[in-house]
Length: 199
Length: 252
Image 1 (spheres, each protein chain N blue to C red):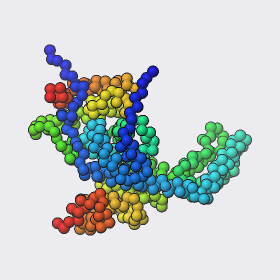
Image 2 (spheres, rainbow over the protein chains, first blue to last red):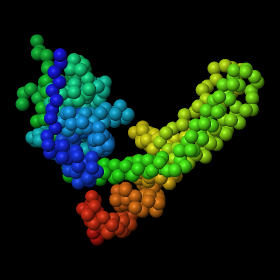
Image 3 (tube, rainbow over the protein chains, first blue to last red):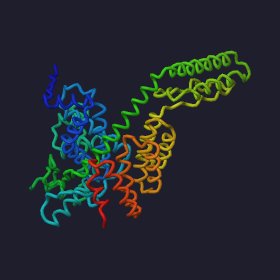
Image 4 (cartoon, chains in turn blue, brown):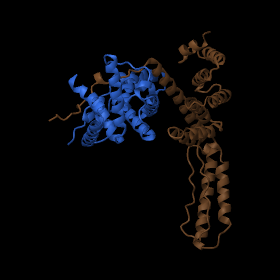
């Protein structure tokens, strides 16, 4: 028999959700401000540097506030919101099928990488990575980004994307296999990814 | 022999050019989210109220009954295999009129064409009843158009905006935002002006006023932008865009 782990919702989250359900605007704003940085990070890692992030975040939070009456508290609020964010990314990418906007035109970037040359290299690598990911099937792309870039476990990827673990694993593997093909034709992307091992 | 290059299992953040969200971006999304939520909620309230309004339900009933009568007549005609009868189209038109003249409270439900396409060549051709869509359906259809057909979406928003319910306000707000982001600034300004004229107390007034400031600036009309920013500050002294509005309103 499969065990189902039910994560308990902490009391402060319950209060916050209850406030939102009462239509308390300050509770809604508190929830938004608490979740925004994390959801922004998740969406950024899924779609890369693109101006569409604000649109996706907007859709995500509207869906969150409109869906809160259906939140039963069986999972952590964060997990539930992550699922909505991934759904929003999926819908957005499926509707637009757009290439990510080159990272250079996106404002407000803080760059943790060292010197100018290194930074330029990282940006170029990042652009190529998301360019390569954009050519993958959407489900494989999202599974790979959740696993390899956002650092989730296979179980989490499966839970967030609503699939079985084996399906999630297969999608990650397919994306990785496709990236190997791309590396063969794109040494810059290869160098960029290899840095992850030597650093 | 060269070793095979291996993609790391994880691509850690330290090689990742990460982008922490700026306060500006957070505030911008926050303003949009809550303006849209307010508009959607007030539109839904209006929909519910009009659905509960006395007198609304009999119209829906009348439309459904007329449509059912049309179906029955058409089926009778087809069973008889008689030559094209005038009764079917007349009944059809009557049903159409009933549906078309129903008040907006027909609302959330979409009345589907009740007549199926004929499967017999000899049957009389039967026109489909026009589908009556609620403002909400039309608004959502416009939203779905936005990603791939901005001009089509603008037309659809304009159609919804021609009504006088809360969805019209939301459509005008969305139209202003769409036109501004598409670079059609004069159209954006006219949508903004129409919104402010028709819905001076609407949920999106704050955002619409700010769209006006930004659009005027983009058009190079500095004095107008300055006046619009001052007007925004007077109306929303603690609003979301106070800081940028103060910068625009300040004398050069």
